[in-house]
Length: 438
Image (cartoon, rainbow, N blue to C red; front, side):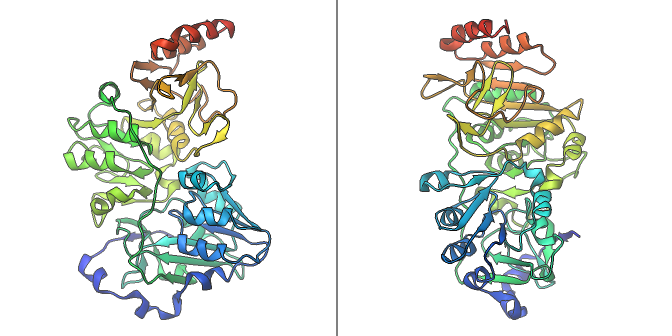
């Protein structure tokens, strides 16, 4: 069951939930103490860091696996503790910097909830906002697959904890109830802001902005992947009229479109007049807080393929690390090493394939390593293919637009070579001839 959240700012600021429900108040250590040998533990998004730190301190546990959707410092602590195994569908900068290993579980964001139901943890912990006087527990800055961790069918002895973070925003939309939790973790601090990977856009945005201006009509519904290029390029479309937003992550660029008046959601067909998302990034917290124009929903709603397809002129804008001459995209690996994960990009690609008016757009600088390496390659080999040649509609580099939908294999290669860096085009043509594509 889902509960709609409507908040009154003064009431929530003066209410002390620890006095209203003292029997639910617990600590990170007490919650972590409930984990037993052999358990599967499920954590939500953003990670409940204090709980994960407390769990990592239990060095005597054996054969415990911890599923953390996007691990940060708490996930790294789990990964570096003997007899605890970190599992994740999305790897992060913090893990890489810590030299921590996570067992990758390739799961699409839309499927995170069903994954938790197929693989139910005995102990689950999600981050939430401070409970309200009526017993509503706001989801905080994200729902993603947290609703499935909370509302999964439970066996005797299964537990659900909420880690209360008082600094996260109150976002209208879906929420939880106080009776959904076996305990609420109170950390007597001001709370902490979620930490996300650094996102650095290229210096020359004009070609990408011009391409998006051509590809995104007034009244379209847009989605943006998390990445410096996609967010910043979309944010420059402030001259557009009546754009709608239906996305997985509410970031800076989409917020700027709303603030400028370019995104009104007035013409949206799914959740009309609402910006819909399942995760809000820290830079948007002040904007989404108690904003009636913003609506948070679980991942299986925001990333439902049919709902994506039903949006008016859906435009899905995502990044890529490389694309080959067959039209296959790698968005998650570098030199054969897992760098991130698929997130919700593949769900939006699939939703676009179900609509006659939709379009998926991949933005990508033409080169890497300061121009030494082409991001358009003959064939993806050591890396995994994230999106197949059947999924990719349009690729944009600073050298132009390659329209791949309905193109033949030879046409795909020709169009991709045309938007590659000029220094790499001749070698790509030679490779295409060797491969029998041209």
